[in-house]
Length: 137
Image: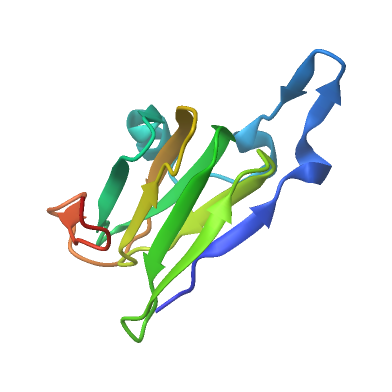
């Protein structure tokens, strides 16, 4: 099973005194643009809540937390649950197909992220997401 990848976006951010801009598809080549555009979504998570607790059998998923802090959890190939704090607005997460994952907002502010999925060509094609509890709330 492939590992989760944490990508440093610092070299790809356009920053000035007004803030920053990131153009994900200028730095990541899309295998299936229609799939990525169809699944592109904005997510908010209020403090103390968890989103995710699933995996995608045939889709690679990309997450970019652009506001707030999140504890990203994922299951490794040996069924170990690992976690990493995402808080700098400069890290993209690439989640391979079949890797269960969740993100929790420890607070104190709302967490915002963008996400999209691309068909990978592996796994069962019928289901886009399958529940898998990593974090109980």
